[in-house]
Amino acid sequence: MELKLVERVQRENDHHAFEQLMRQNQSPIRQFLRRLTLQNQAIADELAQETFLKAFVHIKTYRGEGKFLSWLFRIAYQQFVSSSRKKTEQTNTEVEDKADDGKFEHRLVAERTVKDLLTQLKPDERAILLLHFSHDLTHQEIAIVMHIPLGTVKTQIRRSRLKLKSFAEENNSEKTDEK
Amino acid sequence: MKNDFLDDDWLKEELSDEYINDDDFSFSVVKKIALHEGKSKRNFYAVLATMITLFGFLFIPDLMMIYAEGSTSLLMSNQNILPFMQIEYLGIFVILLSFILIWSFEDFDLI
Image (cartoon, rainbow over all chains, first blue to last red; front, side, top):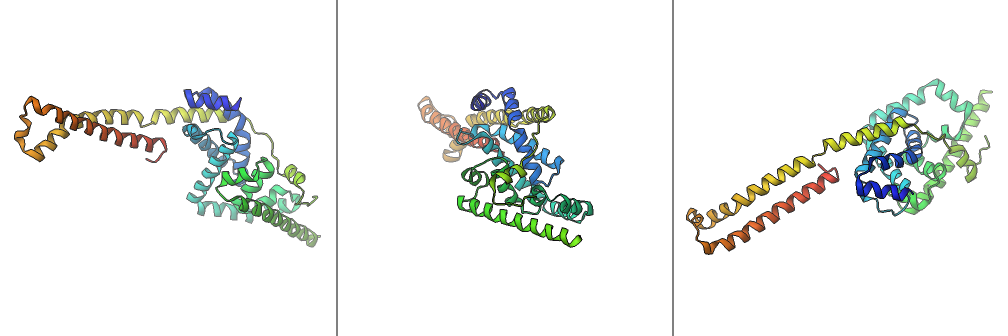
């Protein structure tokens, strides 16, 4: 079904078919970008729009190898990386602002959800974990999306899990100290 | 928190997000696509390609012949028409090739 819609867009430049593809795939792409941008919904949605615009312009380069969603994730990740490069200083300030925010810190300790701990990882580590656990991509698909070797994907997943575990333990010990 | 970071199912559950769906998003992307298509430089390139090809067809061989043989070469006899046409076709081929290259640049957002 999805492939037929893609073919219609490729052959006839069909906006309606692309709109349907967008409806089917917007949720995972927007969720992914929101998590990558530390829940900055405005930036995430702008990146998501750019992702779909780019997908439409370059849809003829999609040859049906692999899932269409994986192809979209690839564009989304590239959009995120290039926007991060442009706004490195700005992004750093945003992250520092969040870290300095007392309420944010308190929420982190109080709730201690994995999603909160995820914000402490580097963007590429965050992306790998999200693609694998939140969006069910295989190691091979992640390697293609992120342009990295398969071995690196496996190592990064293991390493990032251990990092999350250590962050959680730190938070737990902080909470115990507070008591 | 269970804190079992080696349990795949638990991590999947913890990292799952709520489904996002709003028509406004799709609508604004479709609007952006329409705007992008309107702004496409393709028509501009088509006009430019036609003009340059025409210019090349009319003048480049003449200029080449003037350069090679002097201005008297323009007063050619009927026997000289065939090689003249061959030069014309070569000129057109080169010009069209350069525009195909420009179009492919535009398609990949390189310019």
